[in-house]
Structure formats: structure tokens, C-alpha cells
Length: 166
Image (tube, rainbow, N blue to C red; front, side):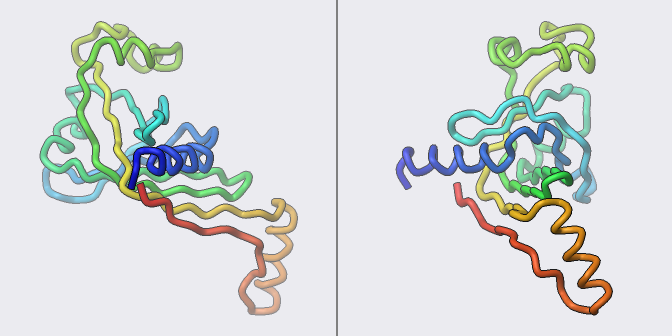
């Protein structure tokens, strides 16, 4: 795959995630158990990399050093859009990048600021993403589900499901 195709897939991924800022970030802990925690996506770069702030003192930081394979789950219940991203997490200690992504909301979680030695970044390089995107309005979806519950059938919804290979 050429970089042009990969960048196009990155644009499709960015479009699907849209304004969904919060993800459940799933990784393997020290016992090799799957655990998840909410994280705020700071940026999707031109290659599809997703950026998150983290502290070097967290189990997430330590765990991705041992096993960098992770999953990110995004959900927007209002328009029934869901995205699951599998990828490899990279630990990034780059003060210029930390400053470049810094904003007021990050300051709330990291009050010592971008110079805090424990404030670092994680970049997730996606392998693939699955998405589910409803094309019907919320009212139409609710009616279809109510009708299906009463009739014992599966809801007839106009929804799109796809996979983006990075």
C-alpha cells in the first residue's frame, strides 16, 4: 500500500471518529489481563496516529512497554456511531510534541504543566478499524427497535458497517 492510500485511510478513520474525543483505551496489565480506561484523544495525525497524554507513573505506560498491542473504542450514542481501533502503542517523550498538543483541558489533568517530567504521550498507530454508523435518525431507530421488540423480529435499520485497513 502506498502512503497515499494509507493517508486516505487515515482521513476515513478521522472522519468516522469525528468529534468523539473520549475513548476506552484497552491494554494488557502486568498479569496479562485486558483492562480499559477512559482517555481523551488529543489528535489524529495525517497518518492516522491517535495521540493521548499519560503519566510515566501509570500502569498504562508500563504495560505498553511490555505489550504495545492495544484497542481503542469510541462511541457516539446520539447518532449511533461506534468505532473500534486496533493498533500498536508507542511511548513518546518529546517535549516539543507535548507542547504542540497542550491545551487548557490537558492542564486540568496535569496541573504541573507540559514541563512535568512525568507528562508524556502515547501514539497509537492503527492496524485496522471497525465502524458501525447508523444512517437513520434517532427517532427512526427507536421506532424500529420498539417494533422489533413487539413483533419478535430483528430491527430493520439502515446502518453501515465496515473495516478500514491501515
